[in-house]
Image: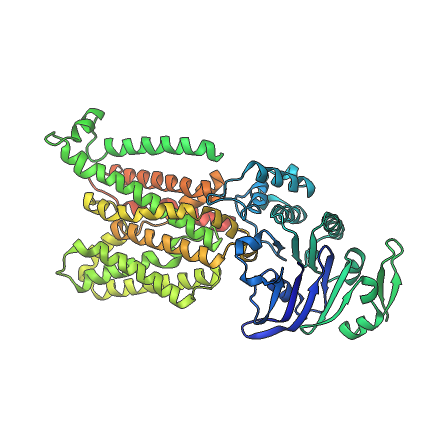
Length: 256
Length: 319
């Protein structure tokens, strides 16, 4: 059932970034992809989201090559929240969220009663229901991010992929988003996200994947992965590991 | 204004403008004259049936066609300042027409629409060849603008080196409905089988508004949607331009104005923008015929007089 990479190489313009990777992402977990800039974590995510093709090897899902599935079927299994989102003109919040239903609608894109229910439910879940008649272009950055989250949730997929979702957010919105993702994970969604902040990943996610220079270095629970040795090896950083006084998860504190 | 209120309003406007176009001109007619004029043998038959009626239909079709092309191009390029003009189609058609008029002086002007049509389609093919099928929207737009400027300079070169034929060329290049009748309408009408296909792209154009990555993730191939939309836009623009010459700014203003009124969902936007385009060109042609009778101004000049300030206002408002 789970998503896995077999001898997978991915890159741009003939330049290989992810190199012959073997990786299985366990189902039903909240997974963070970590690593220094340019390590290939976003590239790997894009290949899982089938935006980039595999150069060699394959991504496997349910025993078949992911990229051989019909795209409409995959759209009902995997949803992606890209790192940056364009701001469409003249589109209301409820319209944008409804676009997430397009893999399910017919030729003219007309929503069924069930589609309407799901769209409404997702707006309520993300706290955007009150904004439904406003134009997306008139929202604040934090509101817009929540509307986009409602859109990918309306896609109603067992897998949710996110590319650095917290990078451009204020800290309060970051915390809010991580809580929401945790709640979604508890409902049974597999969440795979690229993150920059290691402590954030250790606190909220339950499975960490650490990459360096296109290769898989470490994976496992935060306790197994977040160690001084890993930080030295992957980030060339001297750091101590302490227990987070609130959540009890490991956190790193950088040494001088 | 919501889409539900826009459509009845626009249909009433279309009807009123159509009636006005039949009633007014170098001579004003009564409703009775118009009814009589539809039948052979009446005094006003020529004015109504051979002159004003086909021209009315042409204005509706060309206005709707250029506006729809504009909405498709804006949807694909994702920029409100885009229009079929940025693809260089109108200029390509113009260059072919001027070339034909200057070098085949004796040739019949009967073939002018076909020549202009091939010019427009060639310009689009050259753009496609230079950019490739998988190019980004912005690369397409910038290459298109550069090509359009190149075609325009070729037109200028031809007109300056062959000054004898300049008048005919100028007349065609300003875009007008003058002297067009049933044969032009017949030539244009078959191209409108493309309209249902364009409307069928609505759902996919919506998803394209979310960006290429999101479109992919929703199971829509951005490249295919772009290619299909642009192909339809190019064909419709080339067909319209080949009949009436380039009617400036209509493909920019009509979709933009309509988006403000009915929003950006293409299921409403595409049909609504066709109505807006038809109304705008009807109004422009009515003004062109009635401002200084019996002299006729080209409708293309009037759309440019309204369109150019609108374009500038748009530019200044953009942050």
